[in-house]
Length: 143
Image (cartoon, rainbow, N blue to C red; front, side, top):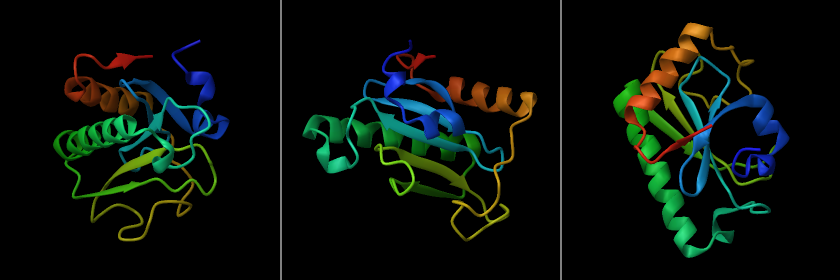
């Protein structure tokens, strides 16, 4: 089994594609083609809140989050970023990173529960993956 993937909550595994992992977090892509929507899941079983991470892990989470934010702005031309760790449905600590646009279907409202997910076409998923591969660091581990 992939590095710690068994610790990813079943709802996240169902709703997302697992892309790979950084040194701390798994990187997931939400299966909703309306928005470039990435999710970081720290590879720390049983953690539900950021404060429960060790200080070095908190710093690493911030580094990985900032990298994703830059990727969403640079690679996907995000006009605004929504970054949040909610955990109301999935208690496992996970941090959403969503690229938002003034012309997206629910702007300026939050995306959660606003519309049913729109599946990626094969081509659109390939395009997103290509963009990510061009911007993720060389030490990022796919799969």
